[in-house]
Image 1 (spheres, rainbow, N blue to C red):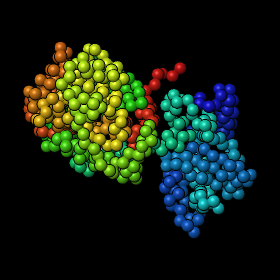
Image 2 (image 1 turned 90 degrees about the vertical axis):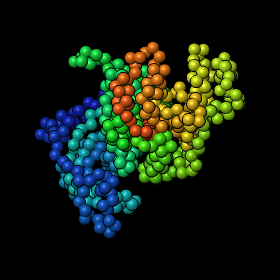
Image 3 (image 1 turned 180 degrees about the horizontal axis):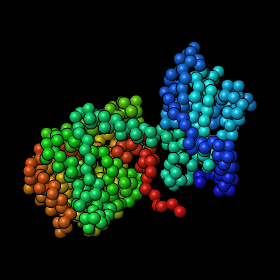
Image 4 (image 1 turned 180 degrees about the vertical axis):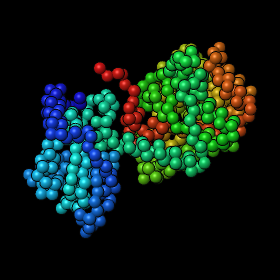
Length: 489
């Protein structure tokens, strides 16, 4: 367990277990103690008024992280949801028996304390304790505060310990919760309706990805864990719900990397009578609102590059084809043969499979050579039509789509489309993508589309990637409380 050797862990476990047994022998069961806090630590601290010490009563509870023994008094700090608060326990105030019991507490124990507020000579707002109760005995010690959990896998496997001893992890993961709450508030304020779509789906549609397969015994058939939220949300556009969104889990049976986890959180938004340009306005307003209301700044340091991302500045717009031409240095790139494209991609240091389609070769250049360099907010416009069968084809250039990919910090954060609502064109595009695997086409969605879907803009936002970006994290694992790991021994 982290930095604590097994023999020490075992010894401390035995000592703590003996303390618990002694308490029970004395008729005290800390796991059945009755105590209800009145305030979180932050709330309690804000109640203090200069010059009015020992007036406002508070009751706080949390995990004991610091004890300083002063002989006839103790200073201690407990940790709750809002942070740390200091306690001052004096023998003359709580009584000899209660003071003796307090001195037997261990770091990691969960306690409740009641009293009044005062400010110490060092200026720290503190609870002058008049009663205290043990609420849960910690039988195992916490990791040593200054070194914490140094094994990366242990950090993710025992995230509850990481959050206790690592202030940065605690801040980042709490910030994620605030970001998610603020996203919902932003959309609800704009009259979007949150809905829930099935996680178990008969057809893994809405994206090109390898699904997880599961068996439904009662129905006697296989289902897929969804890889996208899209097709069911669009059914609700058909139903007449003009602004819908869902923030939920998707599952893709693919690789794990700094930017990928098999189980991830996705926001999808659909707005009738809008288009991809409308989605541009929506995502920019959303991100600047998050920066203002949650982070309190429009400038965020991008950890991998060291650059400062400015969300309050210009958001670049550039066409996909122009980026490819600039990177390859070839104005005639899109007229080149497949063999010429393979040779040029390999010259750029990329590994290309001979069986790839031409658009896949081109997109490899974009994803490996171009996207990582797009640190400032960039709308990449008019992607090749082969990349998404669910978007409208651009009228001026039928080889491209009315879409954008918002790339920030070298990552795709939000793709958005002018949604395809022509059922005949949609069927053709599905069939071209599916090839001989016609069973992978969601016929029920096409049936819904034939009843008429209004023109719409749609957008997906990877919440985990957004949190990487806004919190300055290094990896997706740092913004997910419990990322996927191999089962522990």
